[in-house]
Length: 81
Image (cartoon, rainbow, N blue to C red):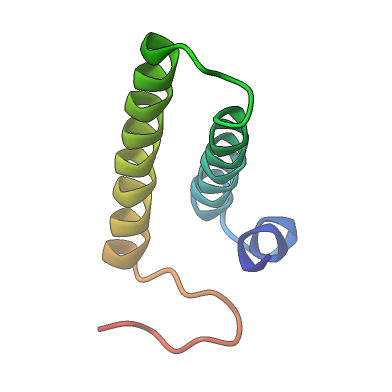
């Protein structure tokens, strides 16, 4: 994944590494939550999963916006204007 490759780079500033690390963690958490739907049947737990997913998606969007504002660009991609 591009985010993981980006996070391993040693020349990337700490701020960028931290943001990419948070985005990777959020992405992993989202994958786990989506998989949880296969194992639950209780409506309240399903509602809880949905709210957690929505919260993580908003947080991911925040970090994505932050990357764009700071002009962070992944290797192999052009800067988005």
